Image (cartoon, rainbow, N blue to C red; front, top):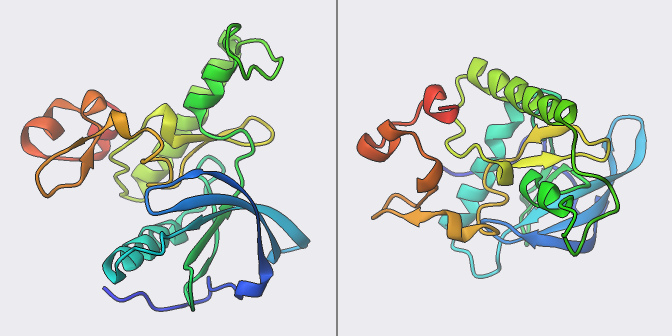
Length: 212
């Protein structure tokens, strides 16, 4: 399917890349500044996904189509798409910035023996329950939208500046934790250690297998 620019298209000159955040499933992810992308904000800190220069046309279209899925989402506990730059190169997808990164890395950094401990104590039971409730709310929203995530895990949940946890955008963190996946002939990468039995056995993915 060919990607057609729409009202989500953002002029390239409104996006400034600041620093690398990590490698995404299609290319590098950056922190950046976007002008006039959020109503009432002249400038907004954002996450910007890119596609590798070596990517094929098919991969570029897949990248844009993956972003297009998020155009229909509007939930406080699902990471928000802000815009797309599809005209010219490189192709960019602009997301809300989740300042504390993915939940897996964030929780590991709070271990008392962690080298990069930010000086905060590990989360309390109450905070852990709050995180779980926020993730459950995001998944309930996706379920209501008839969307199957297929890869719910701590590495795919993101932590905002105010420590709200949101379901991560789909595919952004896949390469960072590549050892968590197994490539099944022609079917891409599968997170075998966390998959529901019916997904492993029959390749069936549903809203039930998302939360099994």
